[in-house]
Amino acid sequence: MEERDQKTLKKGIAKFYDESSTLWEQIWGEHMHHGYYESTAKLSIEEHREAQVLMIDKVLEWAGAGLGKEGKVLDVGCGVGGSTRHIVAKYGCGYGCGITLSPYQAKRAGKITAECDDLPEDSVVEFKVEDALNQPFEDESFDLVWSMESGEHMPDKEKFVNELYRVLKPGGRVIVVTWCHRVLGQEEQSLSAYERLLLALINRAYFLPAWVSIAEYDDLATQAGFEGIKIDDWSPKVAPFWTAVLKTALTLNGLRGLLKAGPKTMRGAAVMPLMRLGFASGTIKFNLMTAVKPLK
Image 1 (cartoon, rainbow, N blue to C red):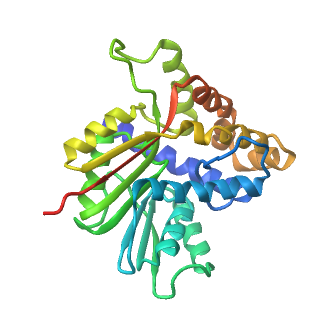
Image 2: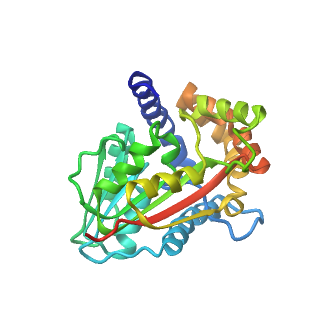
Image 3: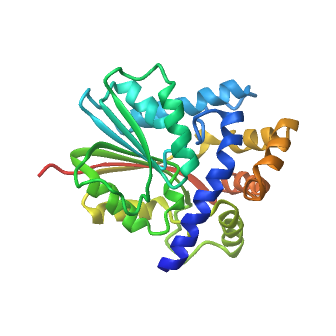
């Protein structure tokens, strides 16, 4: 993707989240990502919110993550800071930083954090408007680099993975949870025309560049120098999510919120059925990757 196109994409992402984050938080709370579902039973909105928190804990457990009091965590694509605060509180670590392209999200994350009673007294948690592909941090700054559903927005996946590697301390762990397309079969050169059209429609609404598979992330992580790479597909574990999001959007409060939020948010809501279709058909995957930066 050309530099000019990348700038246009990033501007669109920032405006989309500036516009939509208030409505999301009003309905779904501080966690702007899928939930982890151990049952497909009908759930209340409170139970869906609990599933979102469970997702964080399950991912950390799966990755074998751990931080001490002196640990430093970076949340890449932090939303309004839900994951950042949860990880800092869970491990009692001393520093957490979230970055986002959205000025609204960074400001709102800071406000929620200032009113949060769950964080260690001596911890520092802050949020910045920064580009994940050109991070302002020095090399080897963080013990854990966390990216929950932000990788799909990255126009240059190689640069994204390399930046995660750069800012991670030797011995530190990276965790990437992201939307991918399915892994192609050995005889396939590309996705089908139908699948490409489906993803193109979703891309326009959610300001996404070209999709990749988790196999490509695996290759990029290897090339960057990561060790102990582990990948997984949790698509079945998030199955109820898009149906639930669509239902909340179609409530009276949801429709009122969409009208108030603006055209970008409304366009995003309009393609929710396509996201559900993508998961149901197997075109879209909810993938995880974790790896460690080797010690020197």
